[in-house]
Image (cartoon, rainbow, N blue to C red; front, side):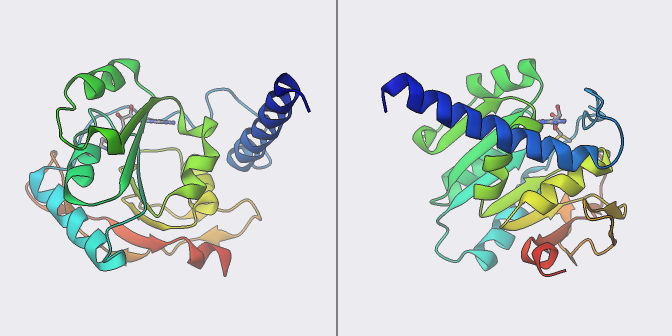
Length: 205
Ligand SMILES: C[S@@+](CC[C@H](N)C(=O)[O-])C[C@H]1O[C@@H](n2cnc3c(N)ncnc32)[C@H](O)[C@@H]1O
């Protein structure tokens, strides 16, 4: 096969995966371009919260190898921290162009080669979700349809703060958020309710 044909085949396969993923977000409703876009209220894990996340990862993956994904990585500080503290390849996906650009600008670290920031909507990147060993997602205000699609797509461990019950693409209601894994965040003195969810629990349901 000539090079351009191979590329076309690859691109077509990718488009199909993205369509299938977006289909999971849509469920039975009519597709709406804004579906899955979120409330953009900003907040982030503090230095205390980052250390808590690191301690959780140390228990899940003692070798500290593999892939870490921050969905909605904001200014990229957590991604940089995890890259510095582990051997993991760390990816941050951020829909907001301004935040993405700042994350690139302030990423001063000896581990730069283990970090990749992407300016995109996570709805376009289902493979990244599937590929990650650990996913962190600060999604308390997010559209439940997007969150349920992300959970269903994942194969690793997810740390999240989505508190509502989710409707899966097979119509089932999923109301088990996982084991409590509190994380300190910028918007309050107290640790926030986060959960550790092993994506296998979705697959075995
Ligand atoms: C609450 S902040 C989290 C910042 C950082 N991850 C932390 O917790 O330290 C959530 C971020 O998700 C981004 N976001 C919202 N919807 C998104 C989407 N569909 N794809 C990628 N990023 C998204 C927002 O722009 C915002 O910067």
